[in-house]
Each structure stands twice: as structure tokens, then as C-alpha cells.
Length: 290
Image (cartoon, rainbow, N blue to C red):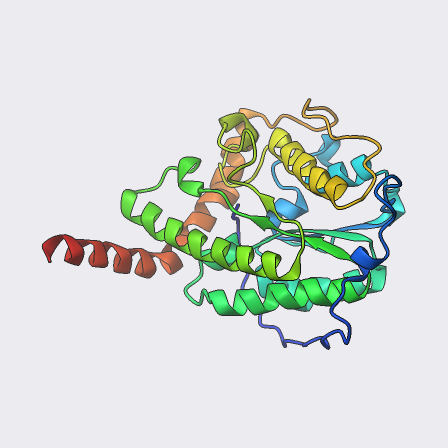
């Protein structure tokens, strides 16, 4: 899921490797017949983590997957933290979001980030791997289980020219390969958006086809909490897929968003992504000629 990106220069602060690699969230879990209660939850990532696509009434901002998952886990209002912001990349989560989470010390942190990385000319799969590994390990040594996502095929939801679709698919495949390797090595759960029931149904998406609708956010929250239940956490109020409490955006608001936010975003990201897409087209052409 992707959205408007602001390029920010940051100084990277590396956190120390834990002396004992055993995650505290595993070693302190309750017995299987006594699920562990999560009293604090953090939501990390980009605009999907912010909640775009699931507006609250009376211009009350965004709700989204984080508050829905918190309600399912029985987390109180003061037990929820969301330092995510629009346009965030994996490096942003490590350097700008994780310090607040370390101070908050939640039992669980949910992560939706990576698609902004795929659209940038400096996409670096190895660096994403290193950053995600550091996120998981640093949070684990502080007692926090980090649950990331692996991504779906955006070309099945957002219509793109074939060449650009191939280029984006290649980038997403590279991103997913990194995520798969890291979660396997670190032994943490991961929500597979491609395998999530209803992931490619249009009602699961907002008008921009880039962010989940309220139903889509509910599906994410349901998927995350199902993984947490498997990891030994209590889910006293399972997420309902019936939409309620949010606002169904009007046609006028859809058009306004597209004009004010969507089209400028597509223009900026398209200019950055185009050279990579052209390279994919050229390689495809050479392969057919040869």
C-alpha cells in the first residue's frame, strides 16, 4: 500500500545488538492454556498504519488497523501508541519511530511499511533486510513482539501499464523475499497480504486503490490478531468485518482527495519510478529480440 512520500534526511542511530538473542516475548509468554494479555500496543509504518482510508466522523482523523487491533486485544486508550506517518520507509521506522516505542515498552508492535521503498530510485533490498532485522531484534530484547506484513500484488488492484506493472511486481517480489528471509530467521509471525481472504476485492480498498477501506483495515486487524492469538496472546474481542463507527467517504470527498493528494503523489512517484520501469521494458525487448 503506498501514498504520498516526503523525503527527509535523517542521521541513522544504530541500536546495540542484544547479548542474548532469545526474544523476551517468547521467554515470558504465558502457558498455552493461559493466553498472555497485551496491555500495550504500538502501530508502526506508513500511511496505512496511520489509518488512511478509514476516516472517523466529524473530521476526527483516521482510525484504521491499529485502533481496531487494540480494541480486539482489550488494550485501553492509554495503552496504544502510533508514531507512524505518511510516506514512511523502513529506515524511517528504525530511526524515527522505534525510539518512541522503546520508551513505551509495548508487548506487541504491528508494522506496515515497505511499499514506499519500492517506488524510490534508491531501493536497496539488503539495507531493508538489515533495518528490519534490527527492528525485530531491538524490540524483542525490550520485550516487544514485532509483527510485519508481506505485500500483495498491487497490479491486481491498481491498474497500471503492463511495463510499469512488471517493474513494480519485480520490486515487490524483491521486498517480499527480504521480508520472508528475515521473519524466518528471527522466528516472528508475518501477515501475508497476498493470501488474506478478500485482499483483491474492490470493497476492501478506498477510492485511490492504494489504501484499505474501512473493511480493508478491519481485515488487516483481523489478520494481525489471529497471528497474535497463535503466538499466545489473548484476543477477548475478535475483530468484526461489519463496518461501523467510521465514515463512508462521499463522491465529492473522493474527487477532492484525488485532485489534492492522489494525482500529485502519482506524478512525483511516477517520475522517480519511471527510469526503473524503462529499464525493465528495455530488458524485455532485448530478450524478445535475442
